[in-house]
Image 1 (cartoon, one colour):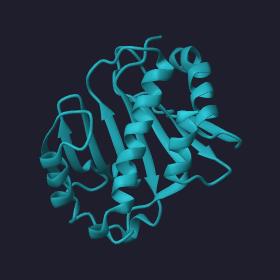
Image 2 (tube, rainbow, N blue to C red):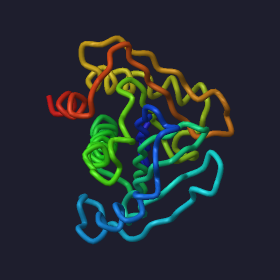
Image 3 (tube, rainbow, N blue to C red):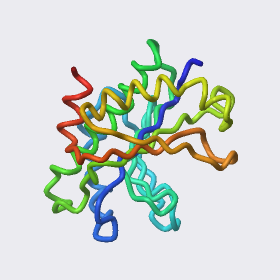
Image 4 (cartoon, helix red, strand yellow):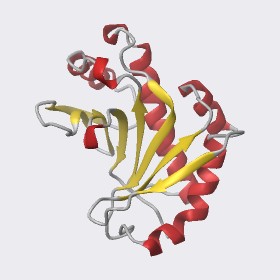
Amino acid sequence: MDLQHVNVKLLLEKSADAELDPLIPIFHGWIEGQVFDELLLDIADYRHVPAGPGVVLIGHQANYSVDNANDRLGVRYNRKSVLDGSNQDRLTQAARAALVACQRLEAEPRLGGTLRFNGHEIELFINDRLVAPNREETRDAVKSDFQAFFGKLFRGSEFSLTPESDPRRLFGVTAKTSKSFSVSDLLTNLKS
């Protein structure tokens, strides 16, 4: 199965303390500086939607956001355009993009340290229901890809993968590790 449109969401700690107002000017600065490989275009503010998409930085090839989907606040990377390479290449690219965005937000003084990766929980989704319908057959087809990817990402730590069970939702998994990792640790693991 050729996975495209990979989404990675890094769950944040102490989400009740998070202040999202500064994200608007921060994301505007990212657009002005074109700080990522993708072309960044605009911002959409959905903070008024309960358990919704939060603040979205819209790009041509991908979107970045701090979303609260399913009442789980996190930094999300949503790849929209097709990428060449293997499934491992695409999973790694999406995870790296989410981690770099999270790292920038963690270091952002205007946020005062309120957005921090929880260190042990990541959601990964495939935003393409035609390529990856949320069914048992899809889980079986990508199980080895996901095991290999998270094995590399969580190097040296046991982890569990819990599939999204609702067939109406996007195909994906929630990965939880017994060890707590920093964003820098995970970026290092992806490089090796």
